[in-house]
Image 1 (cartoon, helix red, strand yellow):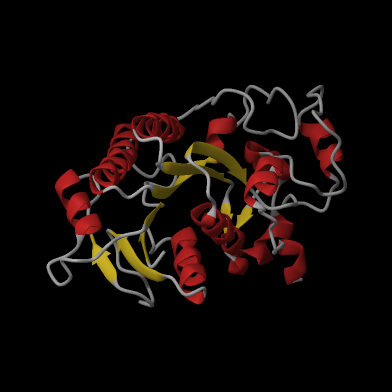
Image 2: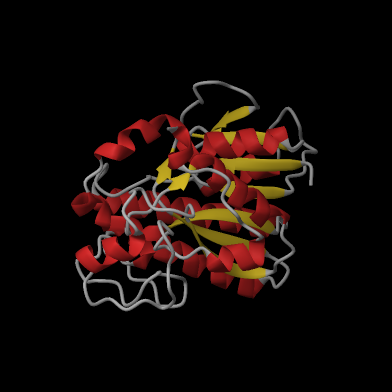
Length: 283
């Protein structure tokens, strides 16, 4: 593998992904609507809601007609509900994801990693989760236009992989992405507020690790993984948090100490994903 296109490479997770891939010898191009604060690899400004522009991005710019893209990391999206009207969030996210998958199909690029979302697990849990720790085993439960766009993206991944059995599209349901600079704020978090995502988070560097492991895996077809850190954002034991804020919700298996309530068991087992960072180490 020599060249990876990272869409959304100027964002928080995108920056960590680009850096991680460059540090391990990959050639990387950042494709985004906004330039990065620091340019460490080639940058292409592109609107992925245009299929023509997406095809041009993936097939080679006029300065390099023979460029061969080996893999795509598709992170570009409206990153959360509420920052644009809901119809725009759904339109932009769904159309961009379709265009990336369709352009890759036409160009025979069969290694794709895409940022799905923990929101498909039922956030913000006005209806309690069916069990804890929550995993990939129960049907998606989108509650916003944003999470609905991610549900559509996962279905697109399944159908594109059905069309071409050699294609791999790994859908990573990332928890709330955090930069190490944000860890100083963790002690001030309110559990009543943070229960919206089962007190979870993902260090951007560990998110980048999950992306790289997905790129390097020999899987075929569409796969979904929950990606979170091994711990919660609070010092309170996880079982106590669950008993207080989600009383009566059964445990699928026991959890120890501050273990995450967003199960990463599948990612650990299949991808070899073991997070290396924790906000607790930043004290």
